Length: 217
Image 1 (tube, one colour):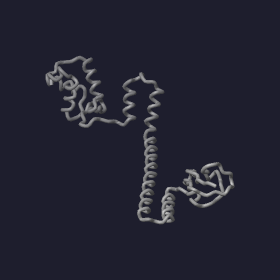
Image 2: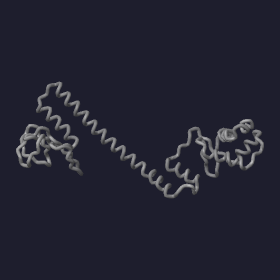
Image 3: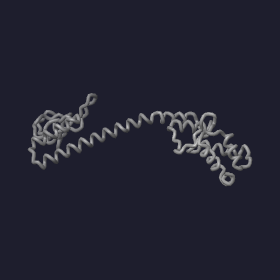
């Protein structure tokens, strides 16, 4: 121990705490070092060693400044870690800066929840698209009729809250709020043929026009 202290004092102090098997005070650490043959050292040297001891990953500081070795590194919650940093730097950090970080840490769980919900929403949409593609391919291989295929597609998208606007091949009158002209502009009220249907997404809180039906005179 004396030889280790001579080359690496911090390692010697950590060894004392680790081999103690229980929380030990600064006085007990010094006594163990002296008993192992370490000559007396001044207060300045101990203060330097104590600072390193307090911030070591495997050391926890219990009430009364008793030091305890733990096998796994101590990883405190982010908010607690930040408060420890603030205390350690004293008045060298602006209060406004500290408050900004505190607020960000407080909002972090909420933002994580929002991100998780957004990811799930995207995943649900991708899954619905994959299921639709699978059904279309299955119907095509089985040579299903056009009518049966359209029925299955519309039934599938209805589950996602999509409501069709017009039906391909139907004739109707032009309404620029619902229709997208193919080619030259079309006057409202003109008779048109639906080339491709549009879709509107309906939820209990929203009614969103996803795409207008494409038409031509």
